[in-house]
Structure formats: structure tokens, C-alpha cells
Length: 334
Image (cartoon, rainbow, N blue to C red; front, side):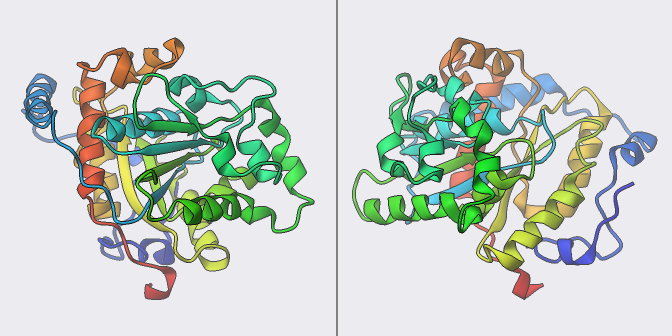
């Protein structure tokens, strides 16, 4: 059973009382009782459609500076890549300029955006090895204006081993990203948001992302094992803050694969909200066949089925992120 450590909890804006820890999924499952939820999935979907439709022509405000969000969770299958590319596409839908850096050797984010990432394609590997500048490997998405990507190729699979012997191995991506942001600062073509999609591990690639990022976005799956590794993840984030990137904040937590028909999803969601407080988006991402199908067609759900519940949810989540206050707490404030 996971145990919540006090230093991990104290870094967040809306921390729970000292006795309140993240419940494991087993504890949630053992306490599924009480009154049924009368807020039915159909009612939620109808309300969401009305809300998104009335805002479809809205242009979201651009942040004063580029926001760099690391999308990470050491557990696989929680929707990291799906969340990164669909939030990016949704923000681009609202007329913002968004870049997705694909740091996962599987290249799934590159596939979903429809950008070339075959053998020999310059990508993030060349940035980490100092062969190219970040600006030289950015590709536009053919389907969505304002959406761009930095591809991951198979060469990235060996990068973790190659990085071990390099100087300042943990900050290779940050160096490239800082130079990129400095050159684009103040120009109309600058990016409003940069999402870094991480592999499902806490190796050197993920460490590079956490050192390079300013904010962290954690997708948490509303299912049985979703919370099992959260405490370890938070511990590693604290280590990064203490030694490599004190400016890193956990600004956003998003609940994915939510099934309103089950009490387990509601229980997991309640536990996450109790622990992370205002960092958790009100919008949840439902389990959706359309969201799962879209990458196989080289698309995000925004273009594959823009009227689906999944697409509407990501549009609303993107809008919430644009208006979401950014966390300012650091380990020194604990």
C-alpha cells in the first residue's frame, strides 16, 4: 500500500490535512457505497456539448510567455500521449500556436499528429546529441493550423545509453529549448504552449524533460491501479526540484479514461481531487473509442471525430488550462 510522505504533500497549493493521503485503488474499491450518482453520463455529455458549442468561435488569450508543460506519469497506459497531442490540437483549434516535443522512442505523438518520423528524419535525438538546433527539426501538422511537432525516431531508443557518458546529460534538452525560446521571444511567431510527451519511465529522457519544463501535467487514469505509482512519481519530482530544476511546478492534473457509470471512477477522481486540490481540472476525459481510434489514422481526435465526446472534452480541458492559475509553490515554501 502506498504511503504519502509529508514533504511530497506540502509543495502543492491546496494540500490536504496531514492525516489525508492518496488512497490506493484497493481502498477505494473496498469502500464503494453510498447514494448513486444521479448526474448521468448522458446528462454530462449534453451539458458538455452545449458548453463547448457556445464557445466554438472563442479565441483563447495567449499567455504572456511560452508555457512549457511536461506530460509525465511513470505508469504506462494512462493517456500521456493521447492527452498531450489532443490538448495541443485543442489549443491550436482556439487559434494558439502549439508545439509538441515527442520524447517517447515509440513515436506515438508523431504518428497522431501526422508528421514524418521515419528512419533518417531529424528529430529530438539530434537536439539531444547537439547535431541540430530545435528550430531545425520542427515540423507543421498537415491537418491542424498552428500545431507543430518535433518528431521522435527509432534513434531515440538508444539515447538513454548514449546520454550516460555525456557532460550535463540531464540538461541536454533544456539547453536546446532555452536557446529556441530565447530566439523566438517577442516575435509574433513564437509558440504559446510547448508540450513535452515523455516515455512511461523515469529514465534519462524523462529527467531531461523535467529539467527542461516549467510546469508538469500529470494524466491520471480513473481505474484500479491508477494511484499505485503516484507517490513514487511525486518523490522523483521533488528530487528534480531539489537538485536540477527548482522552478518546476505541478500545475495541472487531468483525469483520463473516466467512466461515469462506475463508482470506482468517481472514487479515484475524488481521491485525486482531495490530494491535489485546485491543480485538478474540473473537466474529465471520458473513456472513448474515437479517442483510441484516431492515432491509427494518423490524426488527433480533433480532426478524426470533432463532434465526439472525447474531442469536446479535450476542447473544454484546453480552455480550462488557458484560464487555470499556474502553481507557484516550490520546495523552499514547504
